[in-house]
Image 1 (cartoon, rainbow over the protein chains, first blue to last red):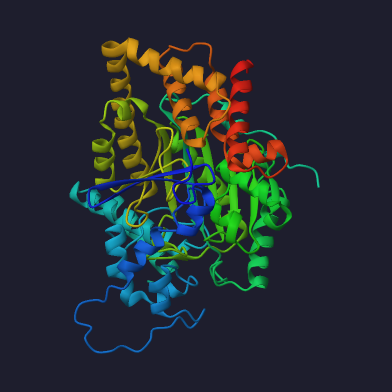
Image 2: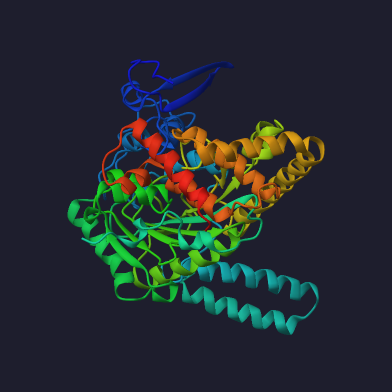
Length: 168
Length: 354
């Protein structure tokens, strides 16, 4: 099959596009595809999750009528509007700097705003301890319900120790 | 420089191992994204910062701390040729982004190629584990172990509220992307695939083609993966993917049984025709090759083509990609030469016993 565009080279790429229910087929060679900016599998061009994301990021929280000063990360210098165009943060500090606007976005992407998974051993020491405390509190409650006060008191002491450890 | 080991064989050693439900699931993959705390993400890092990150992370492998995981080799992307990079992409060992646009990118690759660790891709560190068949939980356990080893030596960017911080907000939290590569020919032939795939996307999973984001599903190969990384634990994410994939395997197997029971002659004709074309064609484009290989795979799964081995088909999926063809010939090929070379490789591979 010859390329539909140039009619010279053999067609090596075959596209089926469905736009608003209308199906179009396209058989072209690689160089014509590049010219047209068609998405070639395995190459980095065309539409990606980041294009999609920047649509979500432009979203301004309701009630923000007044013009806000440009929000900028003081670590890497990225502004919120740059972030919303690119769909990527500049550094880990951006998460703190843009925190006020982040929750609605994360809610839309993930349906959630708080991490509940794995916690690293070193970097996550405090979180690990907090989770341990939550677990112990539940256990203490169930001991109290079963009127096992002696065990509950031991757990309470352990909780106090842990809370002191992380300065709560 | 001598040809690197990964360029010799199209079929990664891990692909040769047996795996559960291998007649439907080709492979299970886990990728976790991590970043170092005191450096900007790769996109904004200065050359000296990204070089620092690269050396710190490579040193974890080069000082032998990963040796328990199969003596990995390390490669700086700047030392590899364009063709070698393309071969790595076709074997799913690195992403097109690492091959194309990374600065100070590097790769740590396990001897079995079941673990590949990308440095300075979108995130500082991306750990990828590949298992044959349907073993998504096993893949996670392995990846998590590697993650722990890195965490002993480097400081991760981790936030109490948001979890592991990543360059793209779609990865924040667990930083995990779990995926299974499924071959679903019977669902395609019986016209059920669209209904099933649209159901899959409604439960928060994504469907992609063989080469991930943006690639078309060719050869009836579909990659199913999680979308959500924040607010669900790794176990919940894996359980969700596992149960959906388990159901899809069930549907595919039921559809295969029905095809055999109701239209055995037709399906036999279809797979034998495709086997015939692959065995004798002189010119074949990538799309047709993928479709015919899918037919033959189905034939093997249904016991209709006992003379063909699955490993040979797995190998051909990779060795018929453009980079591999070109490497085999050692010079640039135009599309028509490529289609001829592809046909030749398939012919000779099917003619020799594995």
